Length: 67
Image (cartoon, rainbow, N blue to C red; front, side, top):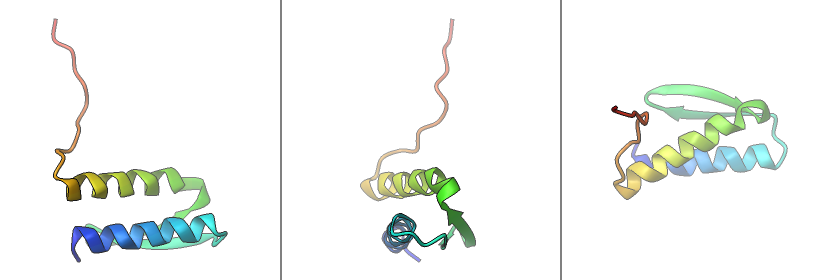
């Protein structure tokens, strides 16, 4: 499954949650994950990560300070 296909599936799952479906499933990294309205923020983060990968943006890590 390509990143674009995964993004399309994740967006469809998010739409289903918004429209009132209680539980939706998405597949990513070879695993199926169930999302509910209670953890929709995880789905939003996954969508943002896919959008960044497709756009070619590097994955952001933790911010550190050096003194």
